[in-house]
Amino acid sequence: MGSASLKLGASFFVSVVILVLVGSWVLYTYESPAEIRRCEKAEGAFDSAAILGVDLTEELQEQTKMSDLTIMTNELFEEIKRQAQDVHQPLCENNWDYPNALFNTGTIIASLGFFHTAPQTFEGKLVVSFLVLFGTPLYFLAIGLIGNAIAKAQLKKIVNTVTPLKIVGFTFGILFILALVTCVPASIIQLLEKIEFFDAWYFCVTTITTVGFGDIRLSGPAVAVWLLWIWIGHILMAGILVTLVSAIIISDYKTQQMRDPEEQKLLTQTDGPAAYG
Image (cartoon, rainbow, N blue to C red; front, side, top):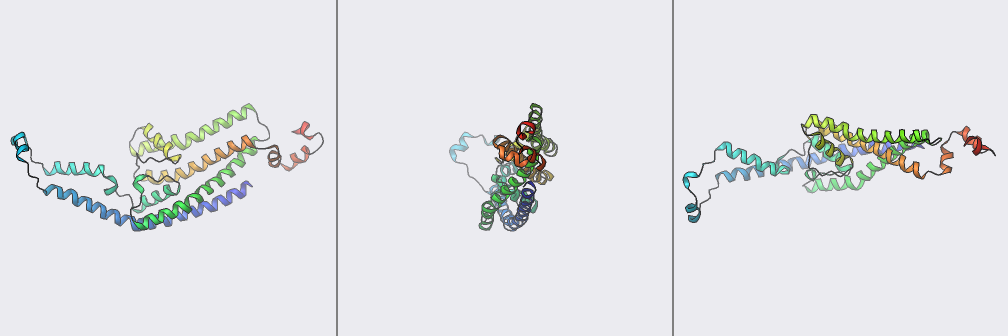
């Protein structure tokens, strides 16, 4: 059963990867030119502000000493312009070149969907709707099947004899995996993005759990690495959850089914449960 779940989950995951590749190309085709047009329009609006004359009213002129007024230099205007563009990041940042489109599509299918990755064109919205309706369930189905295969392998190790030492070891194993999917990437992101470790860890926790506020944005190689890590982290967390739930609610019948055939034969004897259980 574990092998079947793994194979089926892997085949579904390959389908998800194909959806991401195709969807990202389509989104790049439509969203990138639209983003460039919006940015050019925003640039034009900022440039127009530089030559727009504003007449001071007589009252304002009386209240202001003209000698205290400073003519805005080109350098000062460019700085103000840059700050204004920072406020309107979705207008002028390169969110939809192909590498970013690939990351955006992967996070959309993983049900994250940061606010700055929202499509603006009709075609983009149509593609994202398709990805959310079909790609996201397929993604979590694949994650669940692979996680089930991982859980099956772990349950076979702990189902025969449950001792306090095994419980402690299993608990530490869970804590290790949680640290692996949050602290390790946080350390890498801290180095790549030059941010505080806590902020990097906070970003990892909120994205790996599919919350995704979008208040912290990655750039460069961190984007590609983090997308892969999200998928790996989801698989590991699915394995943890399925293992925990199965360990809690597993029945005696399922326990016997998971034992080796030789053990099952011994247990079916009259004194089997007492001698070998």
